[in-house]
Image 1: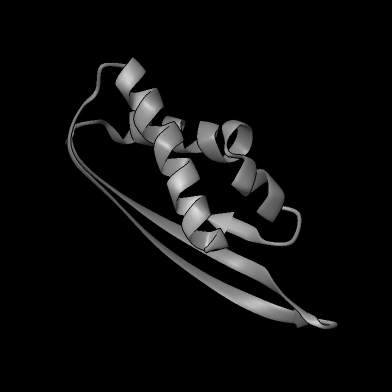
Image 2: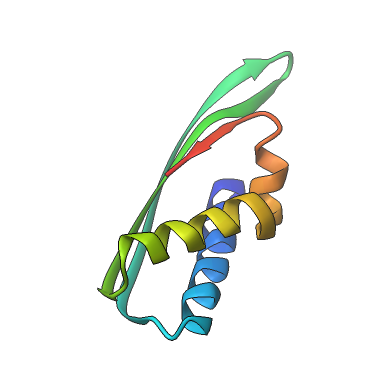
Amino acid sequence: LLIMGLAGCTSIDVLMILGKQKVDLKDYQVEIDASREKVGQASLFKEIHIKFKMFGEVTEEQAKNAINLSLEKYCSVAKTLEKTATITY
């Protein structure tokens, strides 16, 4: 559920940022993959990879900018997970 929360949190940010830029998206999909590592009694997320798929009038630069803003500034789930995990996209 935590990883699904990351996908949802970043998606909301990305869609809002692109919407403010008047980007016309026809479809948007997210795939997420994560690996865990046992640390004591806990299993912490170690590596997380998010695959964003955007269809419509969006440039690669616009997409990267929106994703970076989400992961680095706005998404509280990403900010929490980045303490123990490497998040890539």
